[in-house]
Length: 195
View (cartoon, rainbow, N blue to C red):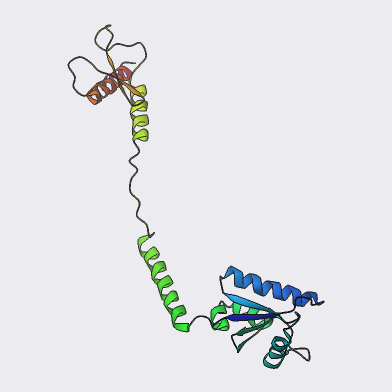
């Protein structure tokens, strides 16, 4: 079934032109397939006659465009269309969607909102495992715990191991650089107490 919009391409009435544009714009935005029939084109006299006999005139002798049909079935004019759009019943007005599918859509939407209310959100979030952030944290801990030009036990230079962007001093006899950081933290705390 095809929605047919009867329009007038050469109407001198600005209100008619504005209404026609609005109907077409709304249908485009809602992705509704439709066919426009310009009753002023040559050879469209039968379409014009069909629109005038099957459409409903409100304030004039003949119905004014835009008039909306679904195949041969009359849906309404601009005012009916606008009202249906405002109350969000455009699909029913155009007779393009069965009412059951609209009810199913509403049921799905309500279930999704219920899940959001119960769970807080619908997607789970996992903690970040960004290695660069870990390296920056390790570097800042080292900077806070060691003092420049300070040797802990002797004035001998110590080999330095490069891990990513951080420099960790390795003492002779230690296996883990983390232990060195812990020792430096303890010594730093002791120095603060002395001061």
